[in-house]
Length: 104
Figure 1 (spheres, helix red, strand yellow):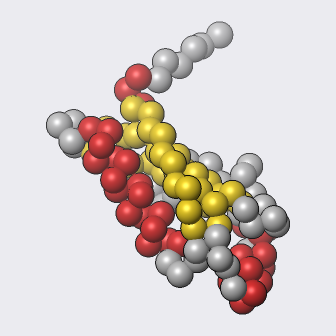
Figure 2: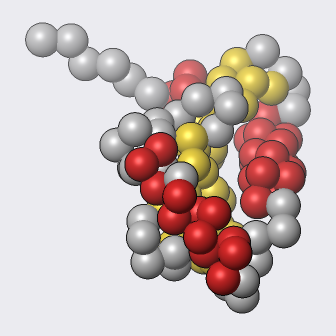
């Protein structure tokens, strides 16, 4: 097993007034700086309720790789968004085995 950092970006669309109120009530917890990569998925957006970002750490078996990590992250995002209208989903993934750490 190894980890991928998967970022899913999209846009809110067709939100009802109640949904907008719900999302705005959660704004303090949705700041980009507070919602980094995590297994639960960091969810960030701003008061404009336009673009949003999810950042996941997804563990997959070595033979499954990036495609499986992307699929799992997309499924998690769609579940978490539930009834909130969204569009324009895009995904990027980084295999953490490829990340080089520089020490000073």
